Image (cartoon, rainbow, N blue to C red; front, side, top):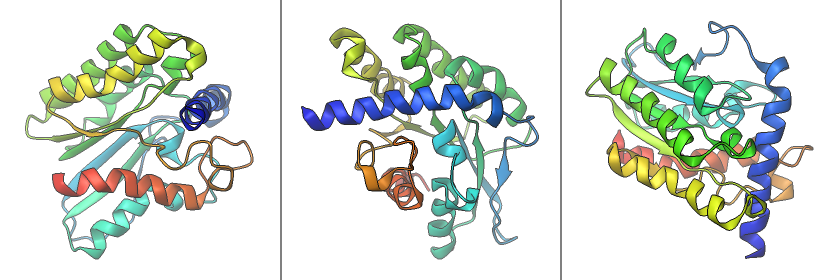
Length: 225
C-alpha cells in the first residue's frame, strides 16, 4: 500500500509540475513535435502523443526521452519505423483533442497515446477524460483506419478519494478494450516515487528513468510492430 501511495503521489506531482510549466514549455504546433533522426529507409511512422513524459521535460536533449530510446531499439532490429515525438508539457485530454487534428495531416501507422494525469489533478470527471481520450482515438481511426493503437495507463493520488481513484484508473483498460488498443498498464511503473530515477523535482524521470519508461512501453509495443 505504501508503494502504491508513493507512486500515485508522484503522478499527482507530475501533473502539477506539468501544469505549472505548461506556459513556458508550450510551443507553437510546429515546434511541439520532432522527428527522431533515423535512416532514410524507414517509411512507417509511430506518433507518440502525450505530455512532459513524452516530451522529455528537464532532460539534456530530447534524444534521452523514451520515444527516442524506442527508436534505437527499432533501428537495432532493422524495423522500418520512424518515431515522432509529439509530447507537450502540461497537455490535458481536452487540449490533446484539439491538437491531434493538426498532427494527423501527415500519415501515421502506429499511435501511442499518453495523456490523462493533468485531468486527474484538476479533478475532472473520469467520464469527461474518457470521452476526450476516446474522441482523440476516433479522430485517429477516421483519418487512418489501419493505424495500430497503443495506450499508456496513468493513476491519480489516493487523496482524491477512493472512488475517484478507482474510476480514474478504470479509464485506461476500458478505453483500450473498447477501441482495441494495446495497453501499457502504467507508464511510470518502477520509476514513480524512486528518488534516484527522478530529477530534482522528484517527479520527472532522469535519463536512467526514461530507459525504464522505454522498457515499459517496448514490452507491449514490440508485438504491435
